[in-house]
Amino acid sequence: MRISARGLFWLKVLLHISFLLPAFYLVALVLTGNAGGDPVQYIIHYTGMGAINSLLATLLISPIAKRFKIAALMQTRRLVGLYVCAYALLHISAFISLDLLFAWRLLFEEVIKRPYILVGAATLIIILLLAITSLNRIKRSMGKRWQSLHNWIYLAAILAPIHFYWSVKSEIIEPSIYIALFAALLFYRKDSIYKWLKPKK
Amino acid sequence: MTGKKRFTQGIQKRASWHIPDNQVTPESVFNDRRNIIKALGLGALGASLPGQVQAGIFDLFGEQQAKNPFTTQGLQYSTPPKFVLPNPKTPEDKVTRHNNFYEFGSSKSDPYDNGQNFKVDPWTLTIDGLVDKPITLDLHELTTRFALEERTYRLRCVEAWSMVIPWVGFSLASLLKQAGVQSNATHVAFETLFDPEQMPGQKSRLMGGGIHYPYVEGLTVAEAMNDLSFLAVGLYGKTLPPQNGAPIRLVVPWKYGFKSIKSVVRIRVMDKQPPTSWNQLASSEYGFYANVNPEVDHPRWSQASERSIGEGGLFSAKRIPTQMFNGYGDSVADLYKNIDLRKFY
Image 1 (tube, helix red, strand yellow):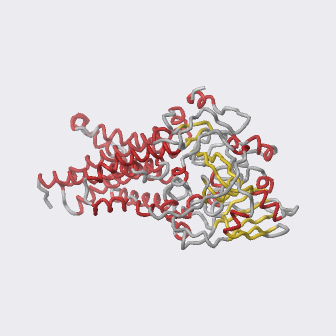
Image 2: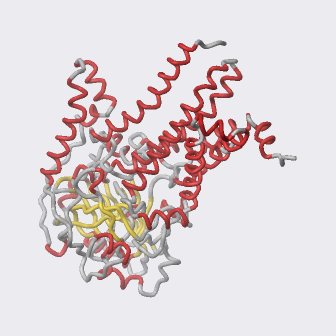
Image 3: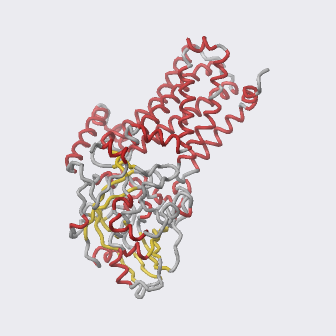
């Protein structure tokens, strides 16, 4: 299926709206006192789910594009990927500012001591690197290495649901579902992951 | 001493239960501020919308339910000076809107959202097991059999946040003494109501966080007889709302919040240690004792400090050092003098 330039534009507008609306909804919930008596955990959890859902959406684009033969869809991947980064940054900012209240020493200790936070931090670093290198100028100058770096998204897709699973106290059903979803999306890419990991001659 | 300095220097030692350096914001000021924010936020957005749409927005935000909240009644009580804290109290609407009560769902707002139709009448609380005279209290007796007193306690959650809450109730010891605890008794077990029809968390694993219901908790007899162990029937001068454990709950202020079992239907005196819900679920993380201890970390939360939930908005919370036994060491440290608290966490 072919999508016109105009169609692609509106598709992008639609995507922006669907990723921005949840953020505005969160602001409205907090301002109206509907994010609980102490919204801190609510905000951290909500933005974390925003990041993980956006990541899922990013990884869904190419299977859908291939299955339904809509090549133009691939041009929305960067847009969606940047929302992964945006939500992940909101997530970590909320943790540092609202929960730890800028106790940097505590943050440092927590990252070292708590494996789930370490896993989250690693995921964030990968996502940040991918976001920064998504600029056209940097992409061009990186040449072949760009794709190799951006394949690290596969690692993020493994780490993010582990971070989620590890962070919950007992409610493991939801994180388990996410692990399964990401596993399926990675399995779909097993050939290209294998090629990526194979030692280069 | 500044807050930051205190944080880096660790626990501040104090003889009594007092943290001084805070200023009280009256509840009314807090509520006004909240209303202003509310008016600014949704008022501006809502005013431009037709009535139908406005109603829709409020439905979405759960305002519908708030119109029919559970009804609480005022209580008669004394306020023994011994249990008055100088710390500013956590505002009532935060105490009633930020709850862990997995029977109503595992998110902090679920207990309020799903608990408002909870029925506490009729209710029976049975005290039995190794006692001379088993007792059954009905709803009316819960608030009339013992003289009620107000106690302001610090509550420290294992998730590293804390509140300061004025409870109304009576000491657990006074109830146990009436029942007559037998000499061979070692432990006291507690059980929450099991009613999956009313408590969606007990019906569905997805909502209930995987806990095996009914929720059970336990104390040693010595802990239960300690002056601080309290059965609360009220909060802020009124009977408890469901999300806080209506109609009667335990409050053990030197232990993590999850020990303070809610909506209690049974208290059983035993000669062995009873199972406890969180210990059953993850024994490596939650021990039987669960004493607040800044030196023993939980795998997910450092216990050295806590976020104190007080008055004010998102950015006004404080991080304060956690005190050993939540600051109640003077009254309870003796109970554990021969126990390795790293092993018996």
